[in-house]
Image (cartoon, rainbow over the protein chains, first blue to last red):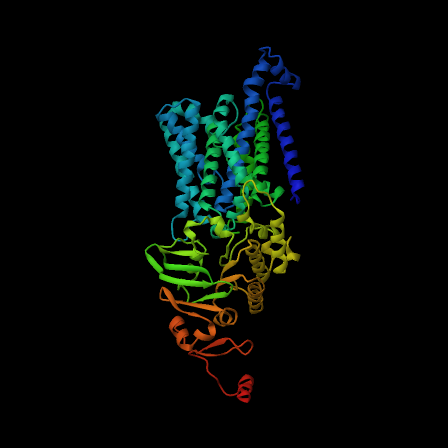
Length: 332
Length: 277
């Protein structure tokens, strides 16, 4: 763990530089050979060559999207872990991503939505419905919200939404073709427009998350203690939930449900930056972006010349780590 | 002088009332102890004094102002509460914990100030945990951990400190140690201390003012010398006892009767007792 605040700050800057390098690499590497010179030329001197189109329409959006989605999912996970005081909390485990996916697929299959903006709104609505349901189910009973109850509620809601999604797709094959690649989670083949249409919401989410850090530090000591210290706990929970809905809903709208980033990254961030959420949140953002960028680059090579969905790559890394966390126990 | 006052205060959960139409005054600058049997509502009452529980009816006044109409941050600068057996997140250091006590003084634009630093250093010094400041809270012994939590409430720099059973789970040595610490804070700095205590004899020894709670209300309150009698203990706890004099400090001391054990012959202590008389 990095001890002093100066070191932690330095770590963040180094992390940011690594993210930028990975973003550059994400534009460079892949089936089509690209050089750094071509990237620069595609901006200064666009010549309508195949490579320049690939850089501008495919690689650059892909690189930006991987960074934004990775950071957003990781932050959403960190906030959820803080709000529920539960190391297993994440948009995937608590059904938020499944809810967002269900609403999007529902919109595509039954309402015929096609516009990017409505895609995003369906995803936000789904994320919100799932979050509220899980929170309410997890709080039922006289002992209020407990880590075990909210995890069970999350798992149940996640299963419910995914099976309903699959049910709809089984009934409607055209829709299946439209959304299948999206459903496995991918940052490839997405236009810059879809990122731009969701970006404002993500930025609000990032901003709220950064302001929340020190308040989450107080909230994790227990609701009564936080109230005793003068915290308006409902306000912090509400702001946290808003950020989670914007970030995971936005990420799902762009890239489909990508799992494991939300649960794994905050723990890695703690390993570097300690337990204070003021640091865990920015570190999660940086490391989340790094993981998704590198997984996306790796996905281009594992079954070369074909591409693996990045969701699959992440899961390959995420599963062992998830088991490790689960073994350390949610009772701690 | 009064620190906190309740007016026609009714408290409860769902439909059940735990405290009914209570008028209570907590004297300023004194140590007040709430006593009563399990489930009598003393913890509930303490929480409501710290606005952690909304009254069903009536009001709580802090410095003459209704706490329901005062901003929660404002209250946190006047009154600190330590819940029963609080839990620190895994890996939190003592220093980080104590710093959280400054939360009510911070805002999104106000950074850590000189004043915050002084309050934290003072709290670490007075509770004697400065040497542990870099250790994690979960690595401390029970007594040290309780001191760390008290340090956090001290960093809050409030005139009034409420504590819910601050000595639970501590051995006798550490119980005395914590109560001595609270007593020093009261005597040297004039802080008002209100606590729920299970140990009747320690309550009698340390409190200036005892509030005995029974039947959804205050059964009796006042100086332990004046109010602690076998009749009171019987009415409040349903326990037969003798009240004698604490041989160390002269406060009333309750010795309970039991079904099973009575004085048998002359053991060493019994013989001493006979000689003394």
